[in-house]
Image 1 (cartoon, helix red, strand yellow):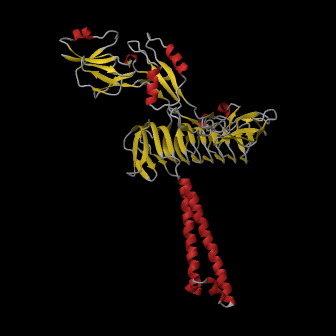
Image 2 (image 1 turned 30 degrees about the vertical axis):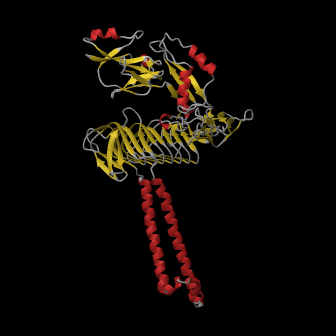
Image 3 (image 1 turned 90 degrees about the vertical axis):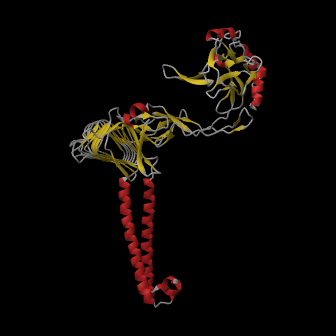
Length: 575
């Protein structure tokens, strides 16, 4: 019986693997210590035995690990040579041995180059015969890889001396190093106040997650708000191959300074509030805004609120009342059959309910615990914690229902970019319309502008016909010459009619510009999609751009998107 005796783990095909501990921490380690071999060591040999119990007779001295494989053809790859005399395979250099499914036996170099090409590491594990690479082995590999910035000899030799050949432990030796580029950065600011507690959770990109907002963060004049970090100029370096390594400028980080913040008299890098007010964060720019605070409900005692800045209500908005603000509106309680309008964001700690009269309109984001029988319109993200039931919702960005059991049931939900929820519709097949890739409000405005354009064009055509009927086509061949030859009274009438033509054409041009500017608002920031992480029930109607799909069966964990090539709605898994 012919077998192949090997001294390594043939299941290990890659030198390095990623492992994860119980805490979820990830690390890189070697896949198999016994696969590290020294120069000239035996990797495998072909043997003839009557029985597998005879294999031990053929074992080479010093090898603690071995296994046998059925005989098959083996081809020698890099770092391997075959000895015909004793039918054995040997390593021609130090490295990691592997045997793939195609029968290729090879020894891979343990030299690893990190991503930015400024450091080369030599991974060393003593072989079964207690061999480790020497300086010559390392130099040969560096030369082969055309690496020119080798670490000084004493440092490498010192690292090699620390390796205990009797212990098969991994040692990473830095064998080449160059000057890494130093990335630059723009000037930025870090907050010195707890934004997470008062103004929402601050993400790394600088935006506020309004799902966690329950109040604004008020600051006093002179209070330290931001710390400034100066701009850094990028410094280029070079790689271990001697090539230039250009430096980059990191993406914008932290925050940018906004209104009502000035340098502290004691430290120019500390910025303090110049007014009493509240923290306002918009696209990473932090400002201090003056704010109106209502300590209680919006009722007969307070009357309706109409304020140019921001408003903080420490209570509820009762039926029949309205709150309108040029800035943000923060409501600590509920909104019940009321009207809320803000030029900025609207944050409602509890819920929004109504009997058909509740209207929420925001120039930026909207967040609340739940929405019921209400109309909500927002230029930004609409983030609802628990449920959206029988509502008309229109967002110029995203509509997101965030909680584990968050649901959308009934009504019509429209978002330009994305809709997200865990449940949509109901088992009773409640009709629920979800629409993305559209902005019905902008489309309505466009429709009005196009009607206006049609009227303007008709007015231009009417004036043109009047000129032609009155003065003939020769007027337009040489207007100045034609007019100069007219009698005074006709000349005056002609000029008046031409001026009217200019006014009508200008009107037509202005409407065209309005249409062009408005059409830009229909462009999506991302591919429009609907994500339902748990169940989408029958009766749900999906519209993506102008394609419509009604679900006839329950869908689970579905991401609905528009297939541009086939021009239809498709679905895939959310994750």
